Length: 124
Image 1 (cartoon, rainbow, N blue to C red):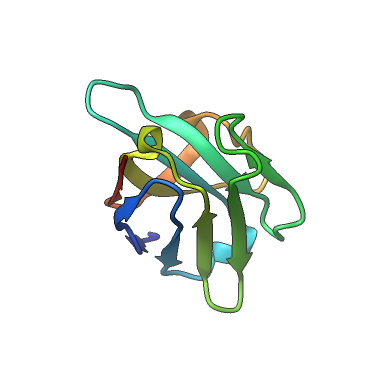
Image 2: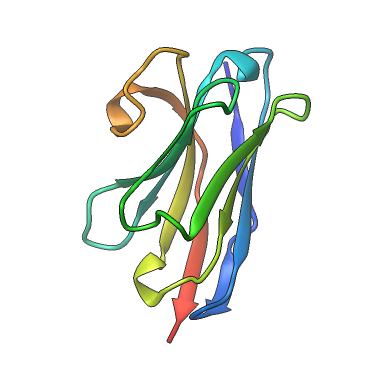
């Protein structure tokens, strides 16, 4: 069983930055693909970013490329999402997810474990 706990969300003005963290329990973190998804009211959960088990490969939604950076520290069992130049449309609950080492990272269906989410609100 893996538990994921997100932190770092909050209220920020447009153009500002936030750094989300996701701490994972268990011994399988270094073997897991880690992803970030977000969901706003009335919308489906959407892919934001993902990192392979070593962090050597990263993936981003077109809407966040160049603004968000995913990274991971396997020694700390933690994955991060650095969000810069935030826009009001980035407002959502952000979820961390963990999946197997060989999986399609862009869809939510392959992820096994999910965190409880952290709210990010960007004011204009």
